[in-house]
Image (cartoon, rainbow, N blue to C red; front, side, top):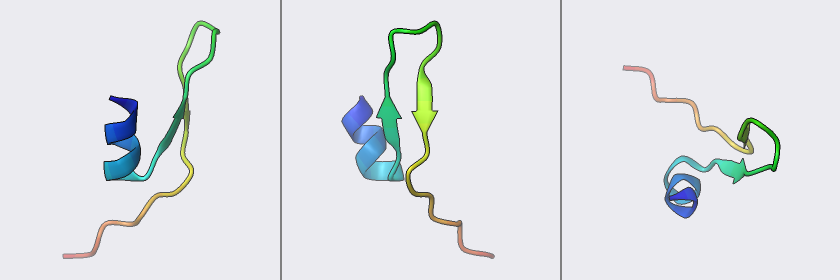
Length: 34
């Protein structure tokens, strides 16, 4: 699941042992304007 998100969205997910899952946005491409 994580690898699919990383490859398709260019996001890096890091799981921690805390109460919440931390989402680290490493790189985001802006959607093209219509």
